[in-house]
Image (cartoon, rainbow, N blue to C red; front, side):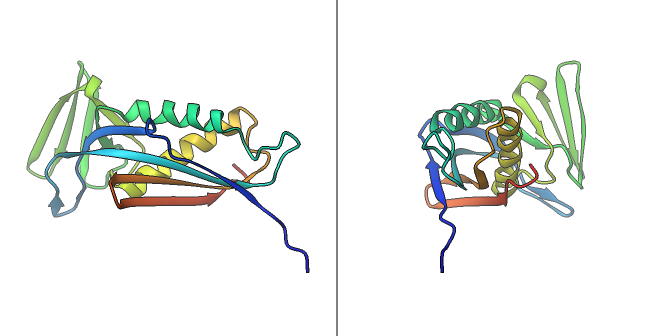
Length: 168
């Protein structure tokens, strides 16, 4: 019985990282504002193209680096939070309200992302979505069948998001 062979690539270069502040909040609970030195990895599966690649390593490194650079040295704010009110950017500032707490940050120091929580799990999905969109815009997903993003908050502690690239 024949099986469909798949090839895979894994990219986890040292420069695919970002340092960012965040806090997890949900009704009745908020972590203190703190930061991590995040490390990102990309794993793709697919068919071997006539070029001998599933996809070019260089393209994955370039696009992933562009995504993580937008998060680097920022405070990550979940724009779809179910318990925080976000006002701004306005007058160069972003106000974040959670229950009785209020943060006022310079807008240039904030990255508002379309997440409910700024967890490593949701960041992995966000990076997956951004990378898939960038690859799709370049017509580079033809041979890729699935992609997984890992986001490590520190050594030995990572979250992963994996999905099919069909229909992306």
